[in-house]
Length: 182
Image (tube, rainbow, N blue to C red; front, side, top):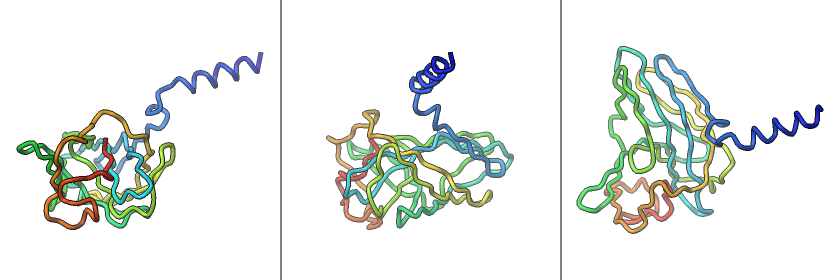
């Protein structure tokens, strides 16, 4: 009977959605950070996108300023939006504001963490840690499970404008073939 029970447990684990098994929640002061993940990249990609949810349970506004990661030379918080059929991506100069009682979702096609100057590909199934820096709450290390590129944000046919900032190293002003936040 023990082997049947073991088999049933293995089957149950196999059919539980991937996100549930890898769900982690982090607390830093009044902030709760959850649903962290990043997208897999091609072998020579220089940038990758990371996503998560931040809830401010406090009474004071905080800001996500950026961060650092051993696998990336630079970590910034970016916005993305369509303007005149051109996808515009910009870093937040003063950080991403998280007001009291507010939940901010960083997701494909919108707000996201940009990992730049990657030291190698991010492979589906792996995890990578990054330290996020907040104006008031301080720093916290977050684990980002790497997920295969999905189809929830296909923008391959649209123009992209990353601005005149050269910090996006090598993927140019109008294309981000290696960005992979799809």
